[in-house]
Image 1 (cartoon, rainbow, N blue to C red):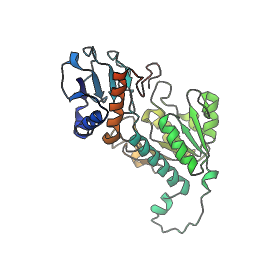
Image 2: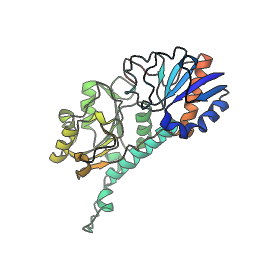
Image 3: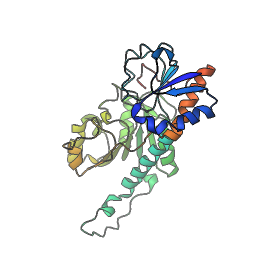
Image 4: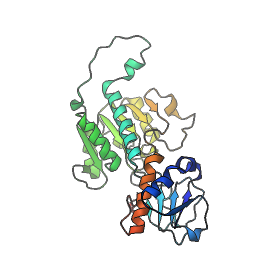
Length: 304
């Protein structure tokens, strides 16, 4: 019988029923525990907020299975020598697609001016059609590709940019310049790495069409906060809808709260759903026992 350590105490109430059920459905004979002797643990189900930070004693552990899509808070841990898998959860992907599509349509249609209209202004101005509004997505992994497919289905011309070459995507510095120039609506879905931190700064924000809208459900550190405020004040950026921040919860004195050109959503664009994530965890344990490649294995050199 395998020993699976659930090392994410705050999330245990969500997983204590669906995860054993998913393991059983996958035919895995496992003992799911919240405490165990390190030398007896075969797999660790993990969240970066876990008190477990020293992986050295876990000599038998075959993989650490992260419950979050982001791994920046764990990937650099020098004691972590076991394979690390990030979470790519179908429920999380669906949630991200819904948030990105909803806010893209909100800004495309100019819905805010009708929803909040204290002066009762009758403004019959019609928006362009979706096919006339360029959308750029920075980061064309599983989430970016799913969002691109949904937006293209609505006839938005979507430009994808990736840090590395991918079919159908722009990449590199010149590709970034072209991608930003097309972005009437810009969606950022990149991971946080040394290369992506502050990718949107004073220089790159100036590459956007004037009045462009930014949607950031990716990582807070992708955007230089001060540069974004300056671009909003200058009219270079028309609005920013932000779901992720360098410090969360966003401090009450942060200028984003009071800026008329910023919408703050409280990190709700995509969440891991226990009901679907449990099956991803179970499948990776099945693969580990069958000698098959793990799903969503993290490349330590790239940081995700």
